[in-house]
Length: 429
Image 1 (cartoon, rainbow, N blue to C red):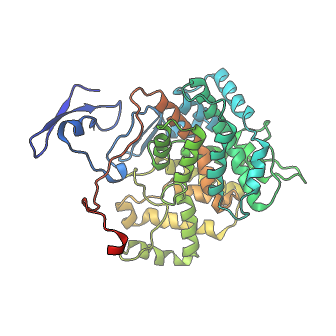
Image 2 (cartoon, one colour):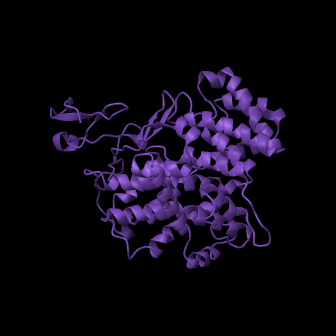
Image 3 (cartoon, rainbow, N blue to C red):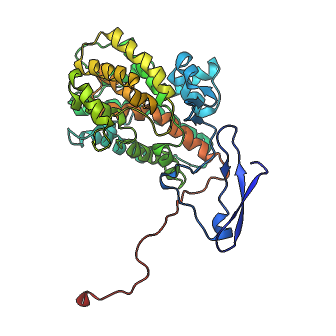
């Protein structure tokens, strides 16, 4: 907190001295806690686009410069040199682990990969064609029923263990959801494999024959998970924090985050990219759809281009673009839709309309293409996102409990309904 203040005077003549909060990076922020008390006024900020709801040391974004930092480390360095388990430790604990800490953390995650057998019976109760994200909301929320009597929310070790369990069990639940949708038997986690290999094994192995995870696929998933691990106060993370501010069970908090992530404007964006490619249909139609995208009166929009936060370029997209081309080359996949995506990328990156507006392909454009290349069904894309983002959710949830001035979330509103009026009996209306 700096010593700077700003004085605000409202029409009635009342004034408020608003302290200016300055973080280690990012724009200065007005502290509005006393505004209503001193002036009788609230603030209005639709979508919370200019409102800081918390103090956090986890992730920093500079959308104008295309910067993304995890605990101060550039995402480019982590993507090049680290792996998802190490990034998970970093986000949760604030520092990169030494070899002993890394091994202990990895073993602890591995130890908690199993889910209760009754969870399998619960999954079988879902309709066979239920959307995987609907099942994830239900099954993750149900973990609160399996881990309720031991949980003391005020105990830091209990909170840490809940975070470990969520990170460890999310891939097991995701794979079980997938197996349920295709009518195959559930596969137990194989703890000799690493995090992403284990997920692929649970998704694609069958009892009838051996299965070895493709190292190219495992490496690509690991990179995607690093890039999706956290992204500051987005809709789903803010949801986890808001629910967490009530003291709710952590499994319920993350279930709420999954529900928020499910929205097509948030985690469902990579699925929307594939739907767009379906609509375009063929490389020969690209010029037609580029023209439609430029037409303000046409509802068609190019999905996976531009970003609400990044006004220059999405640093994750720069990393994943290279990985996307490597995966397609190494797997040697012949898929007309993937060819269409690459051609669309080429044209959009050269078209003055998109370049001048900085509508570059974002992480959702490339992640959808990679998931498709790896054989992951379209309705599982957002589930993959949820596996990665669980690390960010639990890190933010843990931090919230360690922040002294955390209060229950209670946004205000501008009421635009009727003024007071008298009740009229039914027979006189």
